[in-house]
Length: 162
Image (cartoon, rainbow, N blue to C red):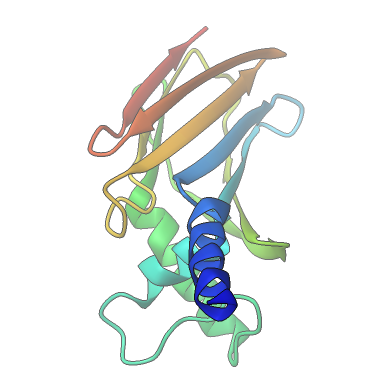
């Protein structure tokens, strides 16, 4: 009896630990360096699931066997699912890296040669291919003014103006 109760409590607690799917993206314009600095926080288990889809072996970002290959997978995924336009023009993301922090993966990209930002458009479909309940929160800071929004599956487009 006690063993059965323990099993049910364990299942209930596991489902409560990670009941929703969310990412947080921070985009900051660095006027001095003329760059957009982008930090994206994803639950690492969710991110690994999305990266592993269609592959023979699971992707492990915590302890990858080949760090260069892991970096390539992460950057390719970000290029496909996080696109930015500055002042109406698409820009190219440059990969800076990623790191694991507890249960999250922090991914870093940047865009160079951005002297000013009057309008910023983001198409964010991160993890939509893995979870139809995914919510992506975005915070954008330009000239010290922070604006925020969220998009939920299947919506992906957000625009900010200054």
